[in-house]
Image (cartoon, rainbow, N blue to C red; front, side):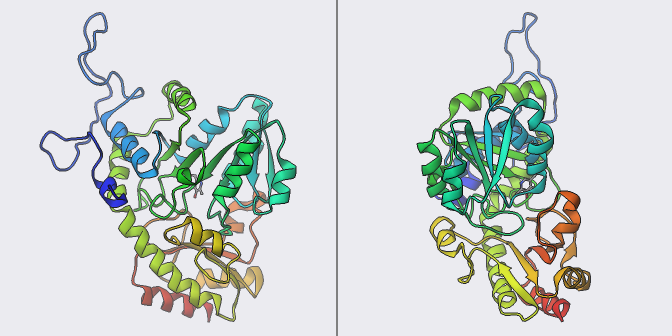
Length: 370
Ligand SMILES: *Cc1c(COP(=O)(O)O)cnc(C)c1O
């Protein structure tokens, strides 16, 4: 079955005549006096129907053997990185979600897991950085906030030849636009807070496994113990979001491409970063591995930081707020948000292009650029 059909119908899941799934809020389930099993579940931290249904839907959408959900995207990354043996090293692409870098610097170091920041678009740099200690190569594609597009197939080939695994943070693309597991990635991670939820009202994360059932079993047990589980209500909301994911991402992508073309030729814009822009360095790779360009783009203003802040303050439809992937358009000066840890250019604005009409978005941007 095709993607939108799999987004709506999960194999083996029926709701006893209900068309919409129910939300199961019970934290505990009846058992016999000697713990004889009477119900499908025991205690919510160990499992719940809404969480199971969401995980089955995610595995099906990403073409993986299994999916595990978490309370947030960061809890997901923490679980995967934290599963590596002490003494191992993670290679992280230089442009990435800043909290991922801070997590590696501040938390994982103390557990004996080191990391190195490299430019994964540069094959020589990657080859030089690989060592017997390299356990995992981690990157976003497209990346935050420079929208670098990295060749998943090429990186996976090099990684596997060196005995390392590959994890892709696919949050910006979503599975509607890109399927990293089919390109050789071992794990794909999502902040479901973004496009999957799709309405800026739910926090969650997921990790989908291509074939590593051993790690999946280990992480599932660890999640029950460490407790970073998704709430049943959030699982229900995200499942509801996934049913319309493809339609939304198609429209986000259509709007973003129109805006990217205008911005790319605007005199106030030094550079526009969008995967499906012919002038973008990642264009050929994006065309090869993405079905849609997605709704995320960034611009670097010719007038520097002041110009970026001026443009952001003049926008009316685009709201200044962090996060992305909702129906409403958002703008953000990443250097201001990320503070001292930032390596975002200070003339850069990141745009999450929403589902408003493209003419209104174009008018808002044109007026703000002056
Ligand atoms: C938001 C985000 C995260 C973190 O996810 P949370 O759900 O906020 O914990 C990780 N990676 C990327 C690319 C993100 O945009």
